[in-house]
Image (cartoon, rainbow, N blue to C red; front, side, top):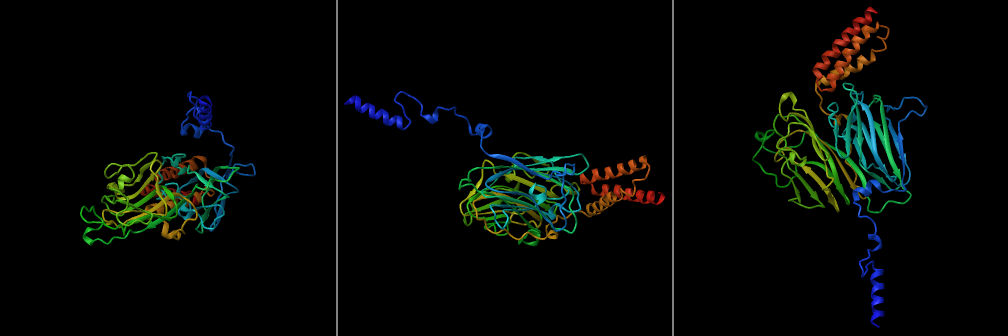
Length: 450
């Protein structure tokens, strides 16, 4: 009887994956590989592919141009899958501003986009000509030839979809875009996605200028006094409804003042909570992992002050861009999220704030705010920039006329144009303008002589 009982107990324990003699359960017979190793070494049945702007005639014109008013389809994919990488190669300046080109993405046949962002801002370039090369977890910007304004924009956001994906680029101007080449890598699956997989979203916003209700004597300067006990006048980066988590954001500031604008705290309201929010910060620089009052550029895997103009040599004046990725600390919400930040302490700075929020959520998502028309989106650029830009294009238009000039003369003009372009890309717009004006005078003189 005792032997029979022992056998029954042993059989029961074995059925549960336990042994009286220390034998491992079946699921424990394999090496304890970390999730990191499995992520890269595990073999999947997924099918991988690429959609690109390659020249299908077999030639070398591997770029497209987006006509005025055109909403060009860059990719259309059927079935379940996930976009893993997007590359865009373009040059600046172009006859269309980066904020005049709108990138949209639609998942699973939806009518309204889950991504609607001006092209440059999506790739952390918020101030047009002020491109910064950087390497971060989700966005990488690589340089091309020095002085030519050629940049390689890369995004590595995973973008899963259950029943198709559609990506478009709209030119909202009356001018043809510059050459635009792209590659989109994705994978397709044989099975449907799990029900708990959210969809990628990105949304652009702007407030120019930010609204301040403090007394006139306290505006636009570092304010140590004053209180903010409701967050009502904060700049709002994102308001979303549903269930998901915030992945990160880009914040652009054009500081019209000279003082430190970053005493503003972030305040994040989750699931409709009232004051005080569970997320309350201690200042703008802390969000981006910086020391006190950064005036030098830096960028890391998860955060950065990657653009700080310090206009006219004055600390904190001018254009600033900052990014933050919530990789190890995602901000989760079950019903809603409202991500806000003060502009100066107690919202006493009146500046140009714009932003992109990146997040995942289960569908459906709330309607996006109306994307402002291009004139309402454009950054305020210095007059020298606009004049130099116009002359730069006109010098390019003259190239055909000057073709029959002697080679040494053409090379001298080309060097002038190259130097002007290099200065332009370095943000030295006044000096660039001088070079382009000199080139224009010489071209007129030589054309008349010819």
